[in-house]
Image (cartoon, rainbow, N blue to C red; front, side):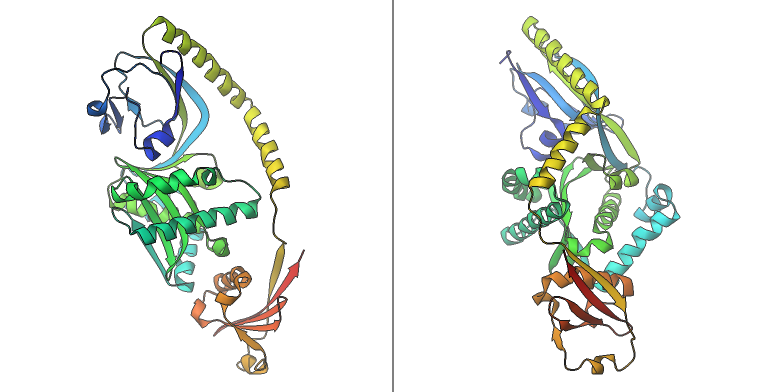
Amino acid sequence: MFGRIHKINFMTTFYKEVHKPDLLKYITYSEGKVLCNLAEKSKSKRSLNYSLSLVPFYAEFETGDYLCRKISQFNWNYGISTKGLTSADEYLKTQFNANGRKVILRNIRRLETCFNIRYELHYGSITDHSYTLLMNRLKSMINSRFQEKKERSKDIKEWDRIFESSKTKIRNKSASLFVIYNGEDPIEISLNYHFGRILFSSVSSFDTDYSKFGLGNIEIYKQLEWCIDNDYEFFEMGVGGMDYKRRWSNVISPYNHFIIYPNTLISKSLGVIEHTRVKFKEFLKSKKVNDFIYALIAKFNRMTIMSKRDLRYRLKKCDSGSNIKANYSSEKEIHLEDYHFLKRPVYDFLYLTQEHLSSITILELEPERKYLLISEKNSYELYFEYT
């Protein structure tokens, strides 16, 4: 056991896995507050050499008589410290400019105006049926979203493990599913992990038919509300510098890499070798070599992933006189649930007109080519072009 390095991704192990490395006695956060006491679970003999990557700024731990080397990584941790916050609206005022706040709040209002929206956090209990339905829906939304982007999802590669382990975690309150529902239809789902007073939004996705409404931002806003209302101290958004994380985060900090090993000749030698390897890897990251490699991989993926036929559409406002429906009385009225490809343009129409879905009449003027969308106040012609 002295002859190898036990490599651990901290973010995966401490949020997603049941078992923790046995050398860690406890983990602290927020000025020494103990979040997780592992001393009772520690084994009497601890002989592994550890290489812990992606350790966030707030995690500290006691390693006993082990030696420890720390390296700053060129990977960034994004999150929101809720210390001193009384509401999500208060946070918007300090974090976003006037236009940024306006867009987020407008999207929430329009979503709730156009659909029968409710928000629910499944935390502490969930039926087998609901769990399977929501996780299958989350997987489907991830696949659809990445198909549109012509990219591959890392979460799908690990899906069997995520699915098998998360139901128990939800029931014992170490995980949760946040869901935005339109009626009974889940349109945005986030699988979260709970650790002390930290909420980690780990795997999330949304129905791309609702893209106009900015569901990702609405999810963060609503989960931030929950964190503040339940005295959570940190809303963790994990690794990866996507634009939305940068906009929302008031804490952006580099991850650390710890190399921990027993005070023996063999382990010291292994520690030096691992330290050199990690330092060189981080040096390559600092020169953006990894960005170049990832760009090549992404380009290859876009070339190999089959995409659906492009469907383009445009909306044209037409005369909304009182007799417009009578003028088209001979045309076929259709129901949206039977014409899935119409959902995104119809939802875009709702966003534009700020009217409820139940007020919309859809007439088919030319199958798969031309439709008429009629509401109480507006009428638009919908044209499709296939490429």
